[in-house]
Length: 263
Image 1 (cartoon, rainbow, N blue to C red):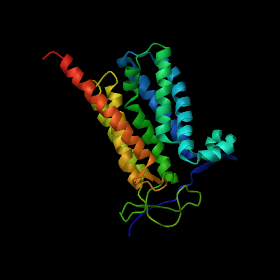
Image 2: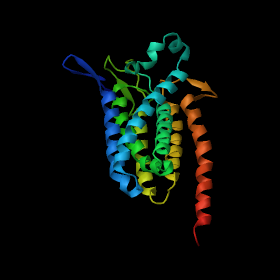
Image 3: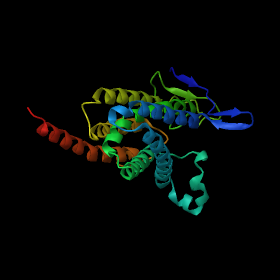
Image 4: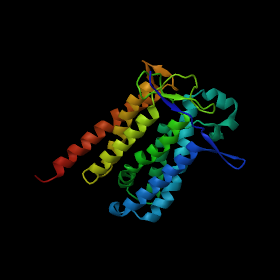
């Protein structure tokens, strides 16, 4: 049975200082996303200086939301008994959906405070989010974080580095991180194509729906997360909730736009 061997050490060293490759690419994802949003800002009538301020809010909201969501779904009692561990994000433990919700809340508060259109800003950010996420997924996959379930497919990956986050048991696993990376890039292309046709928050709703569908199916082959009900994992239930809320809202808004457009 063929497989792809990955011997990647997730920790680099700058002299005596250990550096997590995943942390570096997540930071790079934020930088690339910031650069893209700044570049696109004029066509959405948003001042670039506001983007710089908003990015700080989004980073804080992302980290806090991602950590809170992770703790809630992973033995919250142990964190309550050892509260100092809540801030220990260097140990790992950030959940994507939590980060997304935290970033949305932070952006909403900022736009209301600065009297900006939240819907317009959300549409501005929509294509940049999956691009930034895809960048972070590169070292996530190489390091064995969020590893997949066993597979017999020829592109199954075997992690061999003793520092890998994935089991080094010689079992080929789905490279689900790279499935998500490719899915993110496809979503980004679709959103860029739709930009100009979907406005007033609809482009961001489209992102939420497309990404939630992607995550729902990806988590069938994610091996590092247990199921919680009906054979589905927490992220899958979250994805379904987003689709069932955002889907009808998008349909209603598009129907209203059609009625308001002169024939």
